[in-house]
Amino acid sequence: MLSAVVICRNEEGNIQDCLKSLSFCDEIIVIDDYSKDQTQKIIKDLKNSKIELMEHALNNDFSKIRNFGLGKAKNEWVLYVDADERVSPALAFEISNAIIFSSDFNGFCIKRRDIMWGKELKYGESAVTNLLRLGKKDFGQWEGKVHERWKIKGKVGRLNNALLHYPHKTLREFLQEINFYSTLRAIELHDRGDKVSFSSIVLFPCGKFLLNYFLRRGLLDGVPGLIFAITMSLHSFLVRGKLWILINK
Image (cartoon, rainbow, N blue to C red; front, side):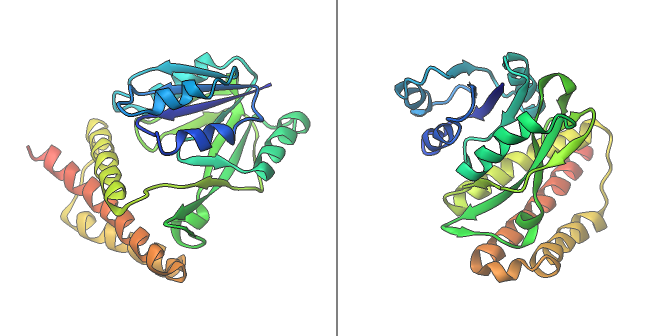
């Protein structure tokens, strides 16, 4: 009844815990973007008959690889989980009930809680993150090369329990990921003809910091909340700065 799809690359530190949290699923499809570390070995060593390991290049297009997984899923319902995410027993129970008893819905949004450097972020951007990650296979496709969204036709509900997210074990990893994602986003905006101004390069990142740190009370998360607010503002700055460079090459 339920297939899980996990997209990964070089996730040897995360993949085992992620897959163990998906034991309630009937099928687990792992799509690996040609990892160079021990990710694939760890998956194979689990010797779990539910797991099907496939290789597929990301090619800077997250929707394409997610839709590839959607096409491989054998069950009516599909759950998407990233390698650095965990499904708690409470969320697993809620998902299992939702797909059985909520016949009016074609999909469900799941809130996500970021746990960074041992602390759960309860405020800021993390507090309002809701992702459409559970849906019926035949009712939609993923769109957008980066910051992709699952466009599902019909009624979409919301689950109560959160998906646990353990990103960025170090600040270096966080900055590397921001650099990677901001490049993809700038290219995507450039390809669709978006423009950027001096004021947006300056004001948008400042506004994002004020929103996350003060209006959404990220300051109550202490130092991790401050680091998160600054780095997410940096992401906004890099997207617009890189877009300006692409336009003015």
